[in-house]
Length: 257
Ligand code: PGA
Picture 1 (tube, rainbow, N blue to C red):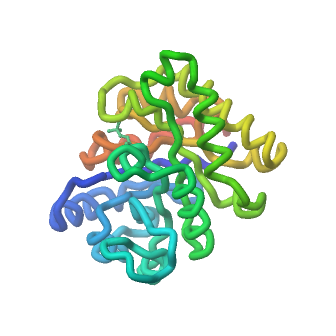
Picture 2: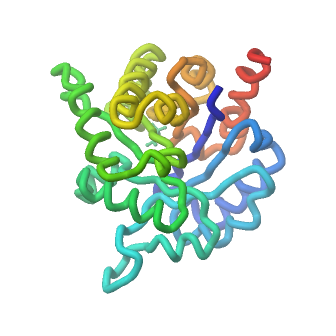
């Protein structure tokens, strides 16, 4: 069994005090990170105050990074800076960044390379919009996004990469993909990775589902063969809900023992 990874994408929510309150509240109740990885992605200025206060189990990630390591790029955040704060993970290619900040597949590829170069663990987001799905173009779109994202990335570097399948029509809409739809798409992504890198990498790579995940639906989603965790937006802002979702994989692990 691949190690499940449960991540909270806070987007542009929470002030410093709210973030600190949350982390202090949840840190004691996180599962052992030998069994489950748990990560919080706050807004960048809060990284510094959360790191070191997050307890033993919880990891902290950045929602974005720029693909150059330094230079005249006002407002951007560099990989070396994130690393100097001991940030562990970085989200790359979230659909909101593609949509509102015009990030392209080529940018995503360069950002993955920057993350690898700076020893940060990328969670790479892919997913179709409603019209792609309705036209039957989901697989075509996923194949294009995955191939372009991982262009020139070696099999060794793929070991540290997590993919998040996030259908845009399910993000923040309350409309979750059914467990079957989510599993099929994650399975299809695994097949693309298999064609590119072979059985071992495809068998090891972790693929999360994201899009209106909440305590009521997480169990069914993560029980699917190809789904190795969840990337959660709205429902991750509530500490009690996050504690429940972070511990959800333990039920599966106990069942498999
Ligand atoms: P949601 O967001 O859980 O609020 O749908 C998921 C995401 O954008 O990562």
